[in-house]
Image (cartoon, rainbow, N blue to C red; front, side):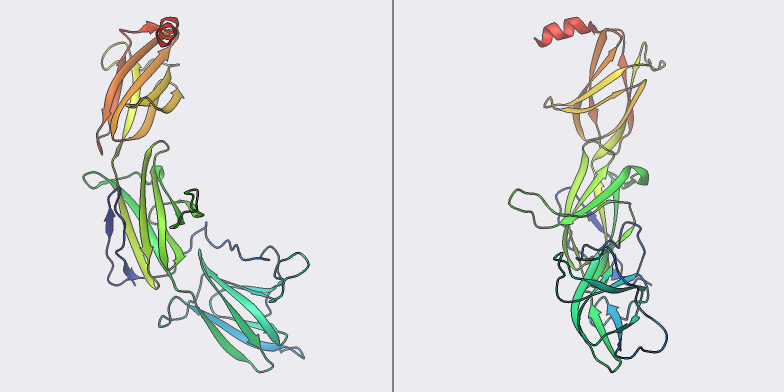
Length: 319
């Protein structure tokens, strides 16, 4: 159940700060890979049976916030010795998956790490000869992303991807990547905080960047607005005619920067709004046309093969 849910529409330069909803667990295939040291191999946690002599029992639970219920699924537990081994890594001695878990360990001090998707927390625990219970507060929530076009038109999900970065950039302006290629309407579990989200529509220049804040125990739903459209280019001998095969395409922006190159009878591409020029080359002839991309307005742009210049003449003009 999600209560008090709101949706946030992000314009290209808008920073998202509005949070909504009570977070629910949701599995994502790209999540769950921990960067915690020593996680490459491990010994399975002992869960059942009589305690061996000299062992203590500890039950571990995790919550999103101090006052939220214990998580019943989606957790990955890893228990490490607190001192690094010869390789400089903390030895991993036990692990478990699911929700609340019980471990049988030699009495002593350990570091326990609980991961929940891309969220995680670490705590030092002490195991004695008496059974005990401990818990971790993850201080985590969820982020669910989507996008629309101008006029609230739906963006085709297959052409939409999101990447989530740390909000703070380094001295060179780069940000650490947390998770890439997130599909729309997928819940990503994250620690509470602000993140830099990059939404890419298509594979060229339709990119929107936004800063979004995730609150602990809540689900943030953010929708960005892309100012772009799908364009199909074709070279024809007459208006409405059949596309001419084996055509090379070059698209440049109004500033003269190359945007995309391809070969084929058609060139289908998603472009950000703006002015463009397309150059079509077929056999030894070159044809050119200017066109405008209107946000949310998919269109077919025909380049007429009635006028053009030879490739050699085009090279002479360039010189």
